[in-house]
Figure (cartoon, helix red, strand yellow):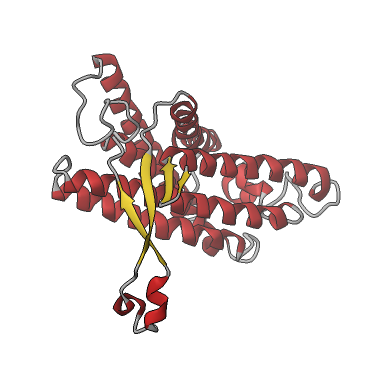
Length: 288
């Protein structure tokens, strides 16, 4: 909404979260289609004889993003995914910062949230290095950024449940679980345990297979891939979509106020004539 004195925005963190997950899922779907339509028929990729098959005994979804033309499209979409993730993490930090300043979140939990946010931003940025090295060149160096993405996505889902940031508790912050039914609370706890167990197992299996050359049984590795994808990717994606489409998300009202008469000192010694220009002040209001 625009006015003579400024601009009012209603930012929605989970809309960017949903966009990020949608981009990641869409990227995988596009890459599967392109690889099966072009790469496999051209003989550039053998789905029965490749690095993944030879290491783990089965293909996972990563096999579809490593070769052209899928790789060409994947890098572009991955960059947009990373940008959406950055915005989402930034808006979530602004919300938790506001709640911390109001005394609704303790300093310890705020610092924990901040540390996780910084790790997530750095990790998701580094994950694009997946495309820097083909697994046939160096499987270890190819897998390290993918492992970073596994940790980022898992930690994000884990953090959001711990902090109640999905508005399941009414306030959306802290441990205000009093309004939750016993079944809902136990469902959240079960999800956390399953997510943690599958994430640790996924990293461990990758290490065993690639570094130790001692992969898990095919059935176990494949089951872990499927369960992790559901728990760390599809469940948060579906939940973010539900929150956004059902209007359960807390928005972050931001007001951009245009004020005449800028102090020249604030402009780094600019000419006094510029003080008749306009300045923009970002004022955060309470989201809840």
